[in-house]
Length: 545
Image 1: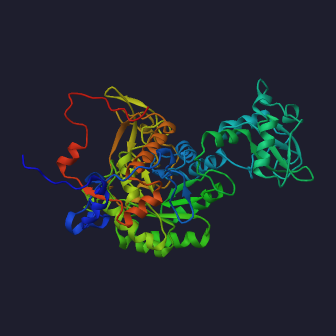
Image 2 (image 1 turned 30 degrees about the horizontal axis):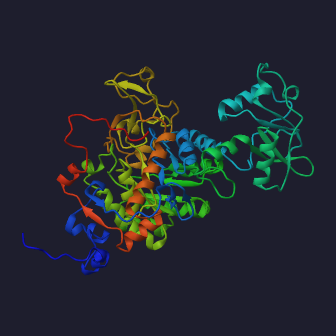
Image 3 (image 1 turned 90 degrees about the horizontal axis):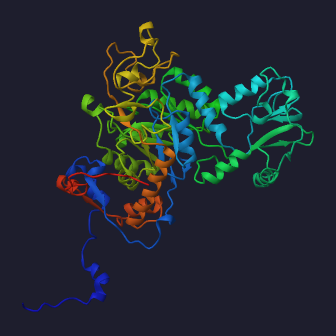
């Protein structure tokens, strides 16, 4: 063979400068709709960078509204088969946030918000307080409703009264429900003075081995409370999403844009709501613009996430109205048929990039809502500018999702339905006597007996329509176990992905994309086949261990 002269290997890195462009595509080239059309997350890949740090060094903090930063960019969708109180608590403890659905009465929704706010606190500013004349049955009622039995006792039965004692779970065991609390309360108390720092109070609580630490003023009147259970949660959930001031978990809930939703919001704010999500399939409406403006005038400190939108024009109207964050997505969810039925929507990756690029100019974060099926989709959404991803189907079927497990075709499943499904649109209507009997069939979702304005019909502007046109379907999803195991899997997968790309955090990822340093590649249909499992007779796909 004829000899061939090669370049000096030591100059390989320098030789890259001879190319007129970096390998792969810049994001602007990738997302050129005139050339490539609309893209989904499966239509492209990100090219690897250089690894010079460990995956454990990657941080995933990201902004979801103008003033709220999450440690992990995960949100659960306000769907009635995805997020109620239990999911919202778990998501917040794990660094994300769960948005409580509004396809229920305002009182039920507010009770869930209240449960989130009471679950983990620094100083509990509004503890449950009873008087000596209350009975054991009152403590049992608190335990059943709120999940705890450690209750301070004051002379007035209210915060600000003179502290007389405390009742714990052990005090009421084996006691008659009619026994006055004056006979069972513990009076040998360890307290801390008003004005003590949270760290100092935590130290006293730790050393005293008590379950609760009452905080009292100079007159011995109760001003707040600290719980040992919260110390344990701080240790077990270091990424928890909390308000910097109160150390309470963030609480988010959805409402519609109808007059009744203003009364609903008042109840939610009274329960401690931090973030309100305006829930609409098409956010660019006069109803939503007027609602944003009203909320900002009435509750100026409340964070407002508006949407849904998929175009710059839609986003502009809501940003101008005062939105603190935007939800992006129309028809991309696994149970959504809006694009099929209405011929309206946009492929999700293209939508996220277009809206995020525009909204970033005004300091408004965006949330990629829908189309998330795996860790890779999360990374791509963040790279295209999203501050977080909102997940429905990916979290449906977990232990914390509403509903009961049942067996379908040999698999343990839970019901999962779109908020545009006929079943969701019928939630909250008065039920005929015949409906009290459980129906048959593989897919079941319990109807709450309380009647209320239906969130699904208002979300799709169809509450006054004689014929309900479905924009979603009902089905079931396989048991995924607890989110307390699943979310850490997503978090760790995200860390490893950012390591492969060569960035240490979400901000660096997005800056690298904007600067053209993080590169992309289109995937053909055959490339997508190649990138998945193929060529095997059978296989087992275990996502984590």
